[in-house]
View 1 (cartoon, rainbow, N blue to C red):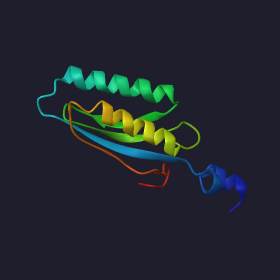
View 2 (cartoon, rainbow, N blue to C red):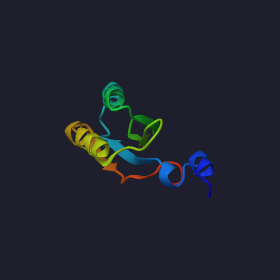
View 3 (spheres, rainbow, N blue to C red):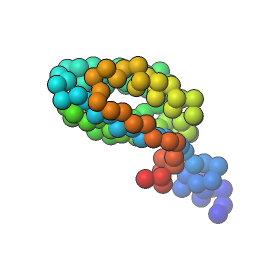
View 4 (cartoon, rainbow, N blue to C red):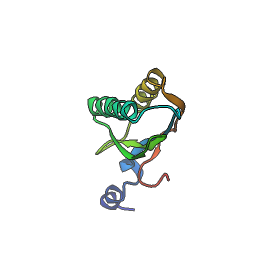
Length: 106
């Protein structure tokens, strides 16, 4: 495959990595607490030039974290995972996936 096509299709050296996460809030968690948690997460991601796609409601938040261009590094994944560990007082469970291809890894 030619380099131009690999770049267009995000293949080979142009592959971009990201990771998924799933957080389940305790049933008695107020919606305001969930919203504040999401705002703090958004601030952390913004500091590291990361983006999140996904969804949330009063009990579950999940998504895929990536970068606009390029890959998330293992160090950045670890920063986010540690943030989850430190901000999990209202969480019943949290899981952070491994780095995988953001375009074809689903």
